[in-house]
Image 1 (cartoon, rainbow, N blue to C red):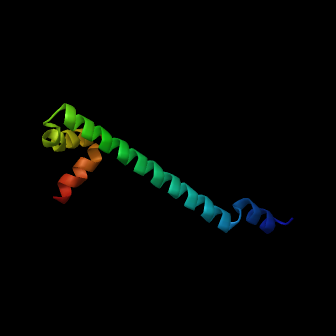
Image 2 (image 1 turned 45 degrees about the vertical axis):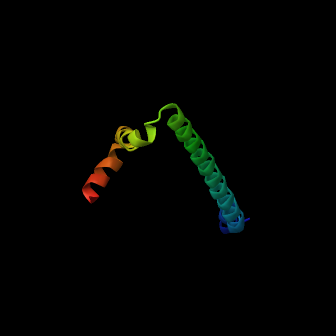
Image 3 (image 1 turned 180 degrees about the vertical axis):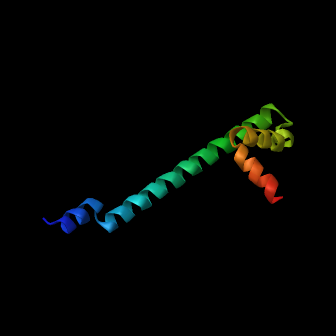
Length: 80
């Protein structure tokens, strides 16, 4: 096997890589959907237990976003 053949073999079949990436994207989409469902269930539970939850939620979300990802908050303020 010469150098070019060996290099081609190390890169793998492009079709195989595409199938792997497709599967990875589907797995990520499924996980996102699962997390969205869990978050929605938690929000509904909190609304039942704390009647004012949905009224206060925008402020809670904004404060959390600033704490978790301050860069996002800075970019949002600049674009306003």
